[in-house]
Image 1 (tube, protein in one colour):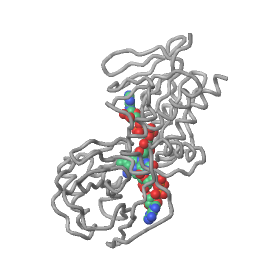
Image 2 (cartoon, helix red, strand yellow; image 1 turned 180 degrees about the horizontal axis):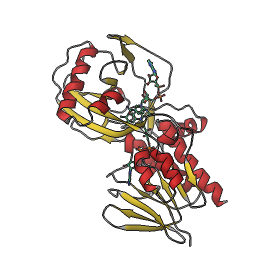
Image 3 (spheres, helix red, strand yellow; image 1 turned 120 degrees about the vertical axis):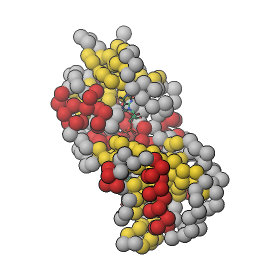
Image 4 (spheres, helix red, strand yellow; image 1 turned 90 degrees about the vertical axis):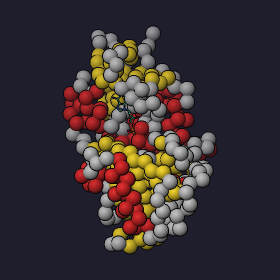
Length: 328
Ligand code: FAD
Ligand code: NAI
């Protein structure tokens, strides 16, 4: 009897790996410390509807990824978002239209990983603390002291900072993961009872605390009564204000938004803040995935390629492909 393959992390990288292995007829068992899938593509439920607090949209430049995104589109999991784009630079807000195709999950970003997960077997609210190998197979230990296994292989699909500890059985891979610095991002959502009097739907911000803002409601399938916005602080500002209270972060980013948006800003009916400690790798890598094929240990995630949804999807697929190549 062959054992299933363990995959730690149900972000887009872990699920891309899971689907590739499942399609090849192999059995997988997924684990995630959160209560649901998505990782940094998660959406937060709120009184103002679901809000995309992490990844805002994604582009598809790789042919294989684009083909997959078109399949997702045909199934209604994603749609094109065509925001009215602006930049804020030198104190000026200016229109900045372009031809780039941008995709979002519908009716929320988390819909993609939810659909990819389908009927695959998963343990949520299960933080893995140790990955260890017996003579013939792998086992996992979780934060509650429970052991899971046996598994034939393990794929670690968490951010680099968490992957390094889980890769202890392969010190070289652990060292590579430990060398990846990941930058934080503070995210704030604001909901206004009346629509703001501005044509802006997305804005790349080049100065001050903010880096990006999006009119969440302008994305396809978001039917909310309120005018909802998501603001992202820059990596620098987020790092400098890592331990600020959520209330203070909301106040400061709301202030920066009021200064740049160029229209009256009433008090929000609703606001929330989320701190992403490991939001993006500080630099890109060309590893694709990290592999010790003889041991049967693999690592993938955006940090192995580019810090984008596409990079994470490609990395997960590559880890699974390398596992399949080694089996055959
Ligand atoms: P993750 O999504 O982080 O998934 C890892 C999973 O592992 C998580 O679900 C986590 O709970 C789980 N996990 C971690 N440790 C453990 C453990 N010990 N045990 C069990 N489970 C564990 N990309 C774009 O392309 N476009 C954008 O506009 C964009 N904007 C972004 C904005 C923000 C604020 C952030 C944070 C990211 C953004 N990104 C964007 C980046 C994109 O979200 C990521 O590149 C991508 O989602 C990473 O996927 P992943 O599967 O590698 O990791
Ligand atoms: P993209 O091609 O839309 O954007 C890439 C970059 O090009 C943008 O950051 C922006 O600086 C510039 N740009 C693109 N279109 C522009 C326009 N019309 N006017 C002015 N500048 C424009 O998307 P891609 O390459 O898929 O990148 C994903 C996005 O996700 C980036 O904006 C990146 O900053 C963001 N991201 C944010 C993270 C965070 O933690 N806040 C983490 C990972 C990605």
